Length: 411
Image 1 (spheres, one colour):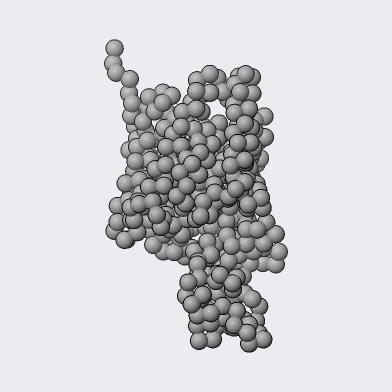
Image 2 (image 1 turned 45 degrees about the horizontal axis):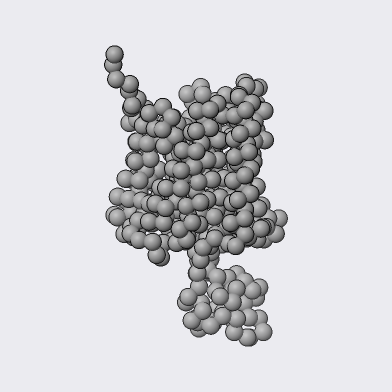
């Protein structure tokens, strides 16, 4: 009797996809994306959500349509049609996927990143990510226990092909809005966007290399920001110490779009998933998807070293905090909800672009979770988790486990 095969023919493709993602992510950081955030599905979906009324949702500092996400969607759609794999499908479990996506996003923003970004942070030397990945593994292990007992969120049924075009249509709309904003230099009326390179002083003044953006009418005089009335709004020292606004840190639009297209095509063809590798290694003793994750970490680590972006340690890491439990606990929920949804957020975006309406529901749930995270002040900062995050994690854990038991009993 032959040995059970632990690596299939897709392993090389997955490893290559991981390398593409890792190299592209490091390159995008070099080109202007936030540190260790060349590609973060959770953060980038949050930024896109912020474009639609960011100020009202306390998300104005993140408002920007991230071309990487648009590219992912369009690339996956093109690949799916090109290889005749676009299939409109959905199940009665869409509502559960929405709720799970919501919980996933809130948890990811407490950690400050999705599973893809956790691996990218590790490849940048951020040891806080190792703590988060340990939590991620625990959550995936718990999820596999439910899978072994018969958990299923819903059985997908074939639908009319036009119904599956929801996500591709959304992607086209986002692309149009991104291009209009780019060429006009400002978002259309009713939308929000952050100027490229924008920084904010401790007094709340916003500026970039070209002009003072806020307060209205203010200007830069001898390194100080001076209001219309001649009063100093921010001193030269405050201007010098100003921090970059997240939405203003970005690579050139077309580079980001091309990178997203390439990753979208590669991820659609390979079925790359940053969570599925751990799940499959436990559940069926297959390691193909783990080869993809290994490729990602190797690719981003090597390129970060080449670009001088690798910084080993816990302190001073970009868009990260050092709270041990604040890194570990939310990632348990991230891992568990990802298993319950059927894949990491990157996989959900790819599946949604292939016509899967359940995945569309999960992505929309993530976007709703982003709104709640900032409106209720649950998202972490560099100082650590918000006070309300601990209660929120407890409530979300109960809801997630409740879904797990409910869907297992009905399987």
